[in-house]
Amino acid sequence: MDRNSMIGLGLIFLILITFAWINQPSEEELKTLKLQKDSIMAAQLQQDSLSRVTAQLKAQTDSLKNIDTAFAKQSFGTLATAAIGTEQFVNLENDELKLTFSNKGGALKKVVLKKHKTYYQKELILFDGENEEMNYILPLAEGKTVETKDLFFTPEPSADGKSLSMVLYAGDGKKFVQQYSLTDNANLIDYKVSLEGMNKLLASDVKSIEMKWRARMRKQEKTKVAEERTTTIYFKTITDEPDYISETKEETITPEGNVKWVSFKQQYFNASLIAEQSFTKAVTETRNDATDTSYIKYLSATLTIPVNNTANDAFNMQLYFGSNHYKTLKKLDIQLERIVPMGWGIFRWVNKYLTVNVFYFLSQYIGSFGIIIFLLTLIVKTILFPLVYRSYLSTAKMRVLKPEMDEIKEKYGDDLARVQQENMKIYRQAGVNPLGGCLPVLLQMPILIAMFQFFPSAFELRQQAFLWAEDLSTFDSVLSLPFSIPGYGDHVSLFALLMTISSVVYAIYNSDQSGMTGQMKYISYFMPVIFLFVLNSFAAGLNYYYFVSNLFTIGQQIMIRGFVDEGKLHAEIQENKKKPVKQSKLQAKLEEMAKSRGVDLKQGNMKKK
Image (tube, rainbow, N blue to C red; front, side, top):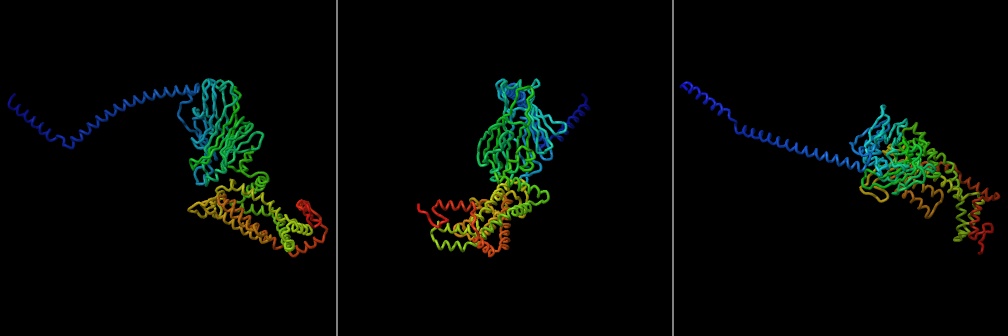
């Protein structure tokens, strides 16, 4: 190698060394490169680990699938394939209802009343998810008993979106179908259960299958206490009148005979299951729910559905979800309106033929139910005015005769039998019925009691505001107390106070007019105070009605007093004394009672026994 070549190679080597020295990485760049290298190695390790875990999970999943399949075959027999699936939800909806169905069990899972809200203006839900159950018990020929809630159905909605079929395919043309269809009545759902070819699958001796219907009733209104005393199960057998489990009991009742319908009834809403023909048996049960303030009671019904064990069995039903509005339920023509509590006997007649019809008629023209209650009171008081007049007239006659009766009492002192004898003599001569003032008042009691039963459950009053009351269907509270008074509550109802004050005023006025003295006088003052404790937590509409009723009664008394001349009345009584005495049946009965006590009213002395 010549000298020039050596110099050239040396220069190249020097250049390379210089370039390498100039471009060598800094300490920070070296750290960065190390981190990148470490990250690449960690990612590679993680990928390897993930691959191993994935492989293990796949192996475990395959194993679990095999276990699930084996378990399904053991538990569900020929229906094992229907026991494996993923839960999905399907909706049906109209103007009134939003219904949610689950393919697991093919059952209704949630019902929302679209036009109504809870007291706290939240979505009003009658059924809700896991708290409800509509489940069928299927006895299979292979000796197993299967519940449809554990099986997956295939949803098959109609093209128009008005019906939904939940189909359980059991192979070889065998199907268990639950079909739900919207109807012209927006609150009513047609519900049909079909067993197509299932006779080959069910036990040969099966004559019926059981349906379990359970619900945990949600709190919808202001107070849980008010809902507890109005939430229960009603049922109607084919031959008897509708009956129910007492709201105050936790009880199981099995109605005698075939059952037409069963209703899960709350204070203002209900969910009812109605058979086209009848259920052959029903077992109903209620239990209080003290575990959660958001719920009221557990309600359940186990219903027996007849089957003919033929290739095509079907059972037609209807589901009603809606309000406890008397007129609406009555249109169904199955006596479902009987779930609206209106009392019994004469009290029910008053509410059925007077109160409900007045409310329905006036509500078509008047928007305020406060005014409607006022007009209802006016109508009732107008109807009762003749009785009030007769009561006042009888009281006035007794008041006119009081001086003579006082003289008799002073004359005969402690001889009560003789005092009674002389008093009866005056009554006969004057033509006065001593019970004439009481009977008209007693005849008014059915209306007062009927209103007591109607107002707390009147759907018409729900969420209707009037004056300071935000909701006439529950108590009005003008003052919240920092403590709770036993029997009274932790609030002050102004309508209850006004009712009590007006009752006391009327008691004072009435005692002055009737000359009531002694213990009875103070009892009449004390009774309204007792009712204040009872009614403080009752519907504001009820207390408002009683308050207005008291005002009308006082006004009528003052008006009648203005045109009844007691001086003229006294003169008429004196004239009556001169006329021959015609003994009434009541007077004859009183005379007979006096004789039994040893008093001879005609002879005017005591018989010796």
